[in-house]
Image (cartoon, rainbow, N blue to C red; front, side):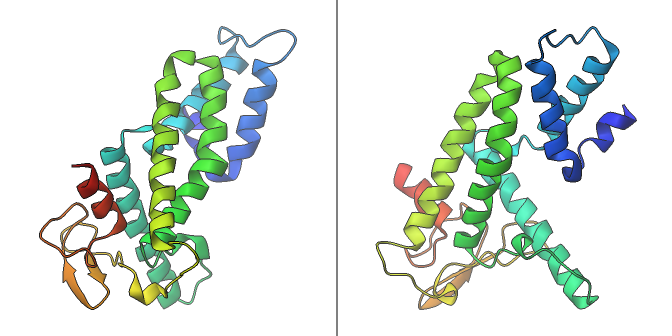
Length: 204
């Protein structure tokens, strides 16, 4: 079990998946009855579960993605305060950068990993349906933030400043004014809504 927990470290992600692919497609076949293959399978499944947020239905996935964004931004702030090196991709200043972060995460990490898992466990194919649907949502946010060739400054787009006091997505401010509320709030003007809020309202 300790090995499986250590395998959730993203530093081992690609190596773990390569081993899994090689084992599944090996000439002798993949046999979970063998100790080595069993350990590998447990490690892959625990790692996949750890990164399963994009495989959830939209409302759940959106909520957890927002909490992760708050956590990442808080970590970057602390690292800057302590004059420590930080990873720029962890900082999301607005909905557009958050949507780009989620889209890249899905395309380069989640999709390849879950394709491998589903190849071995096809009954989990519904997870990939959610992954693709969620990716389309995030791409929709990016398109909304850049209609045509008109790209505004980040200050003119709704922000997702973290609100640490209540755990919500935080202050949502828009062009020509601002307001505060959580993701999915109501009674805001079109300009004051985040991309996700507008998406949800259009569908309702």
